Amino acid sequence: MFKRRLMEKHLETLRETLESGEDFLYVAYATMVTSGDLGTDGGALAVTNSRVLFSGSAAMLGTSSSASIKLSDIDGVASGERMIKGSLIQPYLEINAAGAAYYFNLRASDASEAQEAINKARAKTENKVENGQAPESTATQLEKLASLLEQGLISRDEFEEEKKRLLNKRA
Picture 1: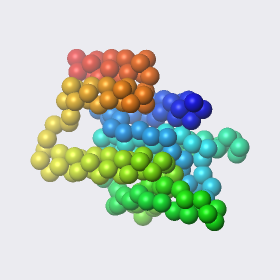
Picture 2: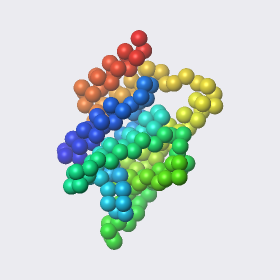
Picture 3: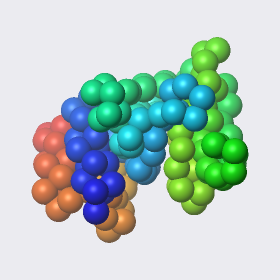
């Protein structure tokens, strides 16, 4: 329950940073590794149609951490497991972009799903640029939003607010 509330708090922070036409494609609870095995207390990792975003906090240090990585800057994405603290196995997601490496600790299924979401978003972005295609339809965006609601990743109020934003954008 605590992780869910924490993720929702950080998801709201990320929602406030979305640009016009940008939508969440995938979200998960994660920690961002900032130094060695140390990282945030946790937060929200989100894949949008143009960026990978993270918002988290390190409550013990009284700091926050964030990341905004453009899909076009990503050189590679990998997921797997690594050993931390001598014997603990931790699933992770690694994103290499513009000469920097970003590491996120997630559940094993979330790490592979996040990797897949990033790769799909990158492929769509590259395909749209090459083919000059229009952005996703409002109907497609609403379907994705409904999926996030069904997965329990956003609340009914968040769903209604985002739906209203999408429909107003169309008008």
